[in-house]
Every structure is written in C-alpha cells, then in structure tokens.
Length: 255
Image (cartoon, one colour):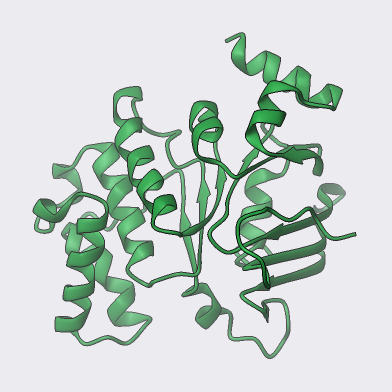
C-alpha cells in the first residue's frame, strides 16, 4: 500500500518509495517502507536512534543498495539496471551530519567541484553558479575562505550550497545540525527555511523538533524499521495516535 501523500501539490510525486526493505546480514533495518513525497513538500522524519531513518535516506539515492522494493525519483526507477545512477544523483541533493569539505579548497572551490567534474560545466559558468549558490546560503562574502576559516555552521551551509548548485529536484538532509554547537544551529535552519519558502522539496531526518513543528508539511515517526505514524505536525506533536509515538515524544521533550 503506497504511503500517505502530502497536501502540497497535486500530480506525480517527486519521491515514490514502495515496499523498501534493507538488511545488513540478519538485521532487517527497513521493513517494507512506503513513502510518497510531493513537489515542494517538506517531510520531517523523526524516531529513536537505530530506527532506520538514515538508512532510508541513503537508499533513496543508492548510497545503500536496498534489499528489495522500488524507488522512483522524479519518475525514474533508480534501481533499474539501465538507470545511470550518477545522472540521477544530480537531481538528489544530499547533506550529511559531517560537512565533507575538501580542506585544501576554498568554499567556492568545494561548491564548484561537482559542477565541473560531474556536470561538465566550464570553470567560468561553474563559478557563476557557485557564487549564486553561496549567496543562497548567505555566504557570498566567504567564497575565498577555506574550511578551517569557517565556523561549523558556515561549513554546513557551504555543503548545502554544494548540493544546491546542481539544481536538484529534491534535497535529503541527514541530521544536518547534530554536529554543530547549539549557537550555530540557527543559521543552518534559517537556510533550510528559505529553501522551503523557495519551493524546494525536502526530506529531513533531524532531532530539531521545534523546526519540525514550524516548517514541516508532514511528520513521519519511524521505529524499528517501520513507519509507525505520519501526519501534519500539529497532530503528530499535539495528539499522536500511536503509543510508540507518544513515548518517543515524551522522552524527547522531557530532556
């Protein structure tokens, strides 16, 4: 049975996941996930550590190979043998907990590397696109700075700019603020709010519950490799139906 759809934009979903399973040896991490994500929708995935959230994201661009099931991104079956996964990945932006910036390259160099090496842009056009991407994350003035000259929040924003420069159809965020000092989290969330306002489709795995309440169109609660409950943030946070959801939220907000 397909996952519940959001109420943002009618028409084909950007991300369509059916019966997704992933096992590591005898451990089944994903147990038949169904998920549909509409254009311009911000879907927030919450749940305890080990519930399969990050594995789900990594299967959506084949950083992990699913054990079974189907994944379509913008109508393309990414698990089909004939699919050029590297071409598909240009449409799927991914931001990780770690920034993964090259220390010997400037912010602009990090942002333009994939544009030149993967997308095949000549340096002048790549740099033009790179400057635009850095401006989108409010780092236009840091184009010539090296990662060790930037705060953690600024480095993560460079990583977001790197993904945005390829003009993806959907952005996947895997705990984008968990490695940051608390005072630096706000600058990254501000960029994500602006991306949402500009219409970017986003799936976010994070423990930033206040951000989820304010910005998400839909919240999904996962536990033990399953989607236990999903719905609008006001219902999930205000009146969750499932006992596992209630227990998780109680543990989070009691901290």
